[in-house]
Image 1 (cartoon, rainbow, N blue to C red):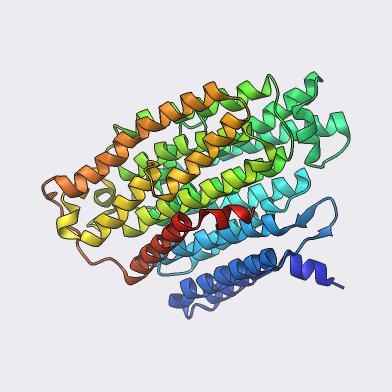
Image 2: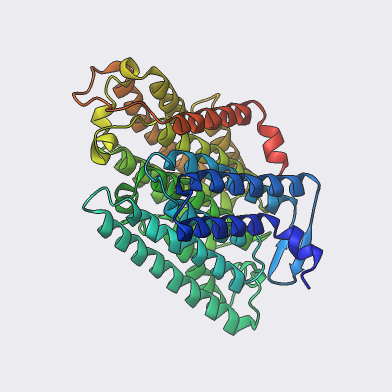
Length: 461
């Protein structure tokens, strides 16, 4: 008999599973397919509310000891990623009238939630694969461009390489400790044993692959560009959030020492600099966001250098601010004749004169992603660099700050296109979908609340 602890602790996952079953049933019956997005939004929203309620009431449980557990901060992290999925579902209605997109998205979200509660490498790997496999199909689903199939294949190879590297590291950890608990990883970070160190390095490199850290970023921009707008929004925000939150859980309360410090610092710093430099010359918005996300992944991994007590706070707040503003960019992006035309930065020229609302929303998103005060992106970067400097890594913090200034150029370039350039020759062919407008307003409200009440959000972790 299923215990109350299992039902309650896994309530967000159960609600997602209910949504998957309902959506599959709708597809099998062949009726009410137009209601698929509404069903998905309802189930994901209910899962987010359930996770929030359990977190605010201080619920903690370990229904599967050593495998799966929840606590208030874990539940709030789940609520955050589930809430970020709601605007993605809303903007998907314009491109995906049927339920295929929603089924794949909810399936991936199930893996995202499982990763946040994993206490063993078995559960973590299961969650990682459940999250990743539907995303490979999502990249190919729209097939708006000839390169979509190639992008999906590249993302599959990249994900497969990450999984293989992760499993190799886990096998070495298991061989040395005889345990599959994730605590063996944090112990290996401070170990002097060569096999334990090698295992920790392999696990870190696996997550560098998943997070598109330089030099493992090469095919990520192709996947972002080849996918549809909602797919790219999901990959850039929720997938990245799941990976970084899982990394923070893995690191636990471990304090880094040489040579792990150099590994965790040097490649993320290279990602910050190269991601921002490469984004400057991109003609496509999605490729620009892809290289931007490489730089943002660098900031997030750099947070691991900070004090263990503040890691989750700084990373989770950054992911919330980054995710909301990234999704706002995609939600406000006006429709165009074709997918390629919609994606060209050149076609954003003069957007303020054609669609003032879209230009203002994208402008706010760009300023926040650049880290301009008083937007939440500034607070998020401040938290990370403050923690890194407090841990004594001043040189790394200074290099990261200098690298972050490079990103201001291409964000302001988008604003210059929209507000200070003549109209582009290609006009949007129709008005934005009302659900996309709803998603834009929801993201804007959350961004404003996070800007005004950052302390409340930080205190939840």
